[in-house]
Image 1 (tube, helix red, strand yellow):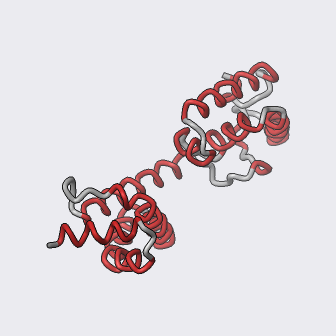
Image 2: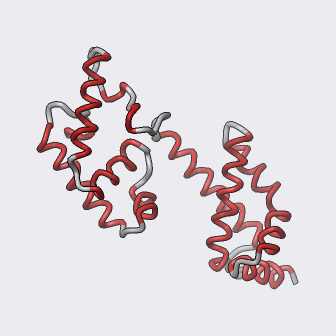
Length: 187
């Protein structure tokens, strides 16, 4: 029976069986790639998504329940969610995520490049004065475009702690230099 085979395969994947991961990839790799490629702009991005989806499948294999969905449905639902999350992140993430090359978007309308660069330098100096957790949360959420939930996962801390660190960090930035910071930090 297919349901028992699917469940057995996912149990093997959950236990770390590399051969089972290979079987899962052989069965669904092409389907996941085509699903990702339909929504993503390039083959390279679809290939990255394919790899990330299979990593997620491996990590969450123990959550598969054949009574709730067929394996193909579960794989494609996970693929769809991952690709949509990827598209959303890319829509809010700056093109360059290096702190030393902040873009001129922090400047005010009519501001010269020099004064925008000065504001960026001031922002970096102010961020450097924050406690590590607050600085890291602000950098990841505002400058790298990650959601607070993603930041919590990355830092392996509760979501509430991330929200508190963000709130405290922004309050400190406002208190330190509210006139000289970008609008998102000064408001």
